[in-house]
Image (cartoon, rainbow, N blue to C red; front, side, top):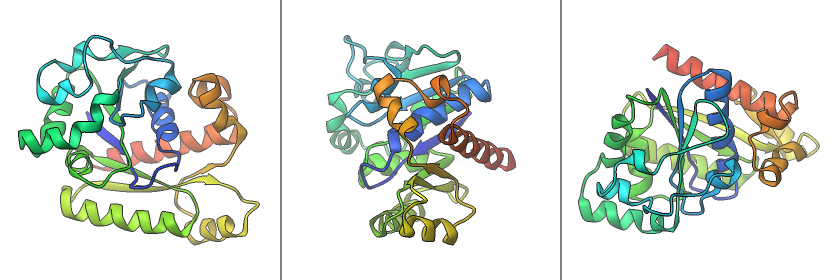
Length: 243
């Protein structure tokens, strides 16, 4: 089992869209039993997949050990892809982690799911606190979406510092140019500066994920953006295979 975290300290960078589409690639392209775990109280991953959270149990209860994760996990419309949805209770998750004092609670909860899933994709909130620290302790790969801008470069530096402070030495960091528009000079310059970074284009098809509440591969599998997500997933799998 491997944990792939999609994380940035900056919001509005395409994080949830990337997490949903990577989870779909894992399940539908690699045919791996996959869990998309939404840690963001905004519940964007569930919305994009057309899945609502459980009305019986709060998402935070998984970390408080009040409820087993299996009771909250929901099936999606896609074979081999399940969702552990978020809800408003996760707004207090940082405080809960401080209260229980368990630095690897998320990592151990994820490890407990290894008997059911080959890949766990975390859609992380844009925070820099104990939640992000727990995420980095749990992850094998962290994907960092970076829209081409000076603010994104600063955000990447903050993530890199957090990785050095919190994560194991073998954690793989994968920067991704998101919302890339080759018509813009700044975007072209950053693409030329980092030609080996995976890139997801700014495209109407990506925006349609929210309108259709579907991953891109489900309705536009031959689009340029779908190929971008596929190439990103292939790069992640290759890094995992190298160990």
